[in-house]
Image (cartoon, rainbow over all chains, first blue to last red; front, side, top):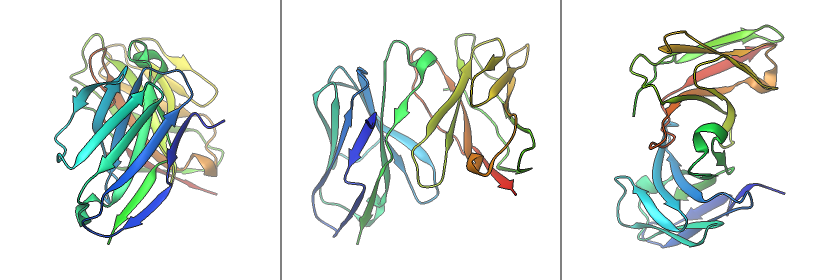
Length: 115
Length: 109
């Protein structure tokens, strides 16, 4: 069983479209995250949800909207896609209270290409 | 978030030990030292973490300086599968996992 799974693995779409990336974790964690890795391979945190509540919202365009229907799922919806949104998006999860001791578990990523 | 400094890249020969250094001179007393690695085309993977004492697990060892201003990740016998970017990250109770540039480790057969 995959601990943190993301779908789709690859996504190619045209500028201006709206798309969603889904993430599910079966680890029983209470906190989930979205990270973006750009073409320079720099990993940056975008959002963090704890028990379905947004606790971090880094400087991200409001075209990006995370949604957490329950603790096991965190989806990322992107409106009006731009070329600069092309990147690999990683979902991760952890226990908020014990993450310093147990770390984060990452998914395998979704490669988004906007053409 | 306290910052860490790592070399951009390192090379190792297969089956030899590798010592990956990390400086974190502004570490606070409650920051844990975490190491992650990212293999090509994969998500980051937890390697090891520590607070004050040296730590060992099946993947690696972590040596922490007495003043905690630096640490070293030790891979005892590098394999080709250890070629990855290794990230040293300070994680406090209120913070999040913030990645720097990491060290790209190349392993030569």
